[in-house]
Image 1 (cartoon, rainbow over the protein chains, first blue to last red):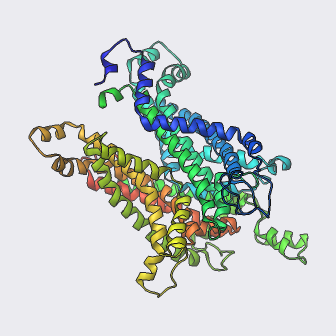
Image 2 (cartoon, rainbow over the protein chains, first blue to last red):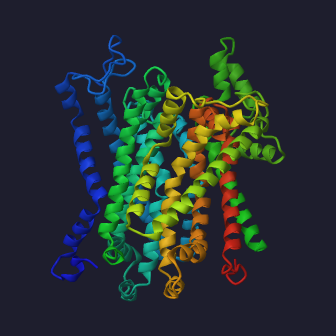
Image 3 (cartoon, helix red, strand yellow):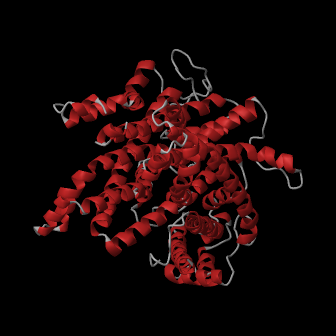
Length: 307
Length: 320
């Protein structure tokens, strides 16, 4: 038992913050992520300040070692590695955030309906969810990433536009990424459905939509936040794998994944190029995972009792 | 039990059938069908020839008709030819299926052999120093991109130290040691990538079991911590792990695709990847379906194992 539990004057929000601060790795991760996001957002400012470029090639400045100007050196066509890492970070973080929110919405919807309705709807939805989880996802994502959007009937100017690889990757990862959120939310909703306040609302004739939105959703908010945080890390991993395999973010737009593809080609000449992008993915993903873990401790009121 | 298994097999067949239609449709949406490829490769090939060929192969018919014709052929054992290898699809896939099964099997056994003891150790003293260290390692394993681990392994063990080859496979008949030499790096990378998840799960399920009354009773009778965990908690803690392992076959296969591609290991993952990028429709389709079937079979096996491990599960009384 901790002090927080002994003194009734401490508000729940305050107690949550205390629990979060006790998770040192989560606090450290939050700081790292804030710094990372700030650095990625100011990529063009940093470019200007150092006088380097993430896109301009310089064949006389290939494979330069780290210097005052090129902090992390240059790549195989003389572009600044640090600047490319920061621009790649913009892409990865954006894809991670947007996709994770999309998966949270789909997952919450499926989970709430399955958990609240129960019966055959629940059985059908959960069978479907389990089937999707057990599928070999990566090969399927590769097929989806390879299909010709023209054949899907998308207008040609959109199907060939530069940003399309960004939208496409968000859609295909969201299409398969919602399953863990759905399972989690469904389990919570199933338990909540039997609670008195939900039964009372039902007895008073509340509509299912009202119960799901007003009674269930606020009560699954905590696990939903945790699951979404954890899935940001997963999404970034998937994005980097697809980009690495040449099917995600397309060059010249830098992403951590496609930077590693280039690095693999020149790994015998310059192995250090393969270190940085992977390290960025690793640090970002582990930080989101620790953050999720810390939030779980912080948002779970039982956590005080179990220590 | 037999009834339950029959049900599961029927369900799995339905999933497989649905997947075959879905994948058939998706693959048709990939750029460049085989006739288009011929058209662009041969200047003497006119648009009329293309139309004639499309009619000949039935490519001008609607998707659903084509699918059912493919399905009819497939059910009679005719899966078509691979465009890249100019061989019947199964002649290409057969040996590679074996390669991947070996690859996945060995790394699954290795990762469980590490993860189960680690999870138990962490659960013995939750929030202790050892638990924190194991947790940290697990988080690192889960968060490291597998293709980066593979590149780092190549950099360290192939380029710097020169201990192991950077990829490929030993030519057939070159002996057991050579085969092992080529397999060590890819198998290690895949193993390291999957240990973290299993360990964390093992820890959580052990902790859940340790809270139960029968454990408290055994503890009150003065049983030591080690005997408590190994003799009383282990078996029950393993049960949920079986389910997780079954559900993770698909993930494991995804990991195999990455490692196989980087290490040029001739398995299913690399073959599917090459087939998709090389417009080899038949090969990609059958490869994907085989991978799906492997995952589904893994699930059924896990159900059987679950029933064997848990005497409480009575299929008759639950009406399954």
